[in-house]
Length: 74
Image (tube, rainbow, N blue to C red; front, side):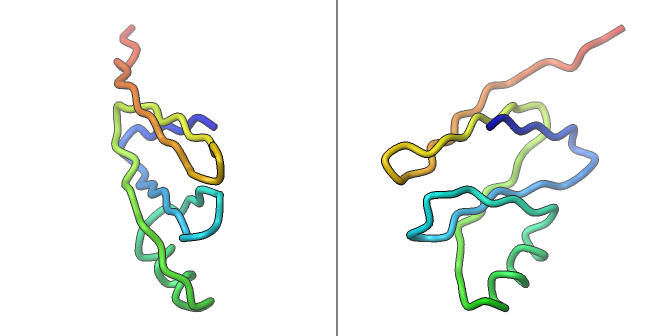
């Protein structure tokens, strides 16, 4: 999976311990509210502008790599 944000819209990625998946929400607050409602906790990472994120699940663990990209000019 590849993800990118231009910085105008927030995006957070989060993992739930014991679940081999990566989840997304537009804000950490929205994600926290949803997780609390179902009794779960997660670790969060903000998707920062100017970076492309590559995520995959390997042996039950989410692996995330980033690469800086330049905006197209024209």
